[in-house]
Length: 318
Ligand SMILES: C[S@@+](CC[C@H](N)C(=O)[O-])C[C@H]1O[C@@H](n2cnc3c(N)ncnc32)[C@H](O)[C@@H]1O
Image 1 (cartoon, helix red, strand yellow):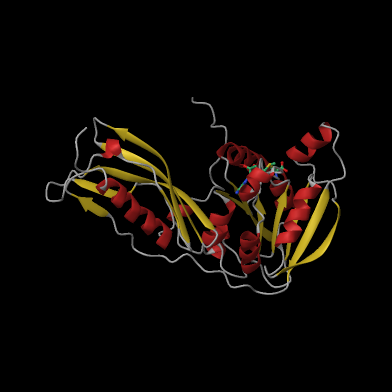
Image 2: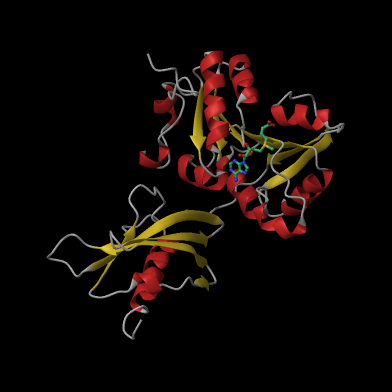
């Protein structure tokens, strides 16, 4: 018999990319209950403990790292809790996609990656735009709390709060959470972790990325092996082409793309390849199957720019 997979059960994992937006959580959990979200849930131990202790609430753990999600799945299976679901995704995309305004009773995060280096400022999760999104998804009066070992990170989060709809409710010593990272930092001799608590006081409007049918492109001629990586920084939308991988045998190229708009960042692949349909022009530029992005104006702009980049490869000699 094959050994049990390391995650034991996939049951709590949501195949959210194929589900309606926003998700109908009463259907997911089979009941109407308060909904709590943990951002960066890591190995899921706090999630599992809280779900067991607060059985009348439903919990959603979000983490972008599959190894963490796998560990969390194992932990949830062992804990036998049924009021938790896991979402493998970047937190902003999941919050945008899965929750209606005002749907959440609490959002929290234990030891989010602090990115203390100024160079990595853009990677910090709790920036102003994201705080606005959290506020939009929280019910009025509901808390967002963060525990961190980096006081400077919490200082920075506080600078981001103005205009988000959240208000500072308190900051002080954190109660013991006993998570993996807390133990890790304690093991290194750190102590005195802090908890920053914000509360939703006003409901900020957050632009929802517009859902639209994506328009793909067809070209008569193209020389993908010459494709140049470009970037367009616009007022509302920024598109960057990061890598291009081309397979000469299958005449298929994959363009790794990042589109940022209204605080939403999406990474995906655009396929530039021969169209097998003889009734069509020879080359097509389309979203690579299985990417599961929100079909926003930014993604469409990326497709249009990929077409332009492919068109620019035509003509001339090798
Ligand atoms: C320092 S670990 C803390 C894990 C856990 N909360 C703990 O205390 O042990 C940070 C976690 O956040 C996740 N993470 C970082 N950035 C994220 C993002 N933008 N969206 C979702 N998860 C993220 C990482 O994969 C990692 O599991």
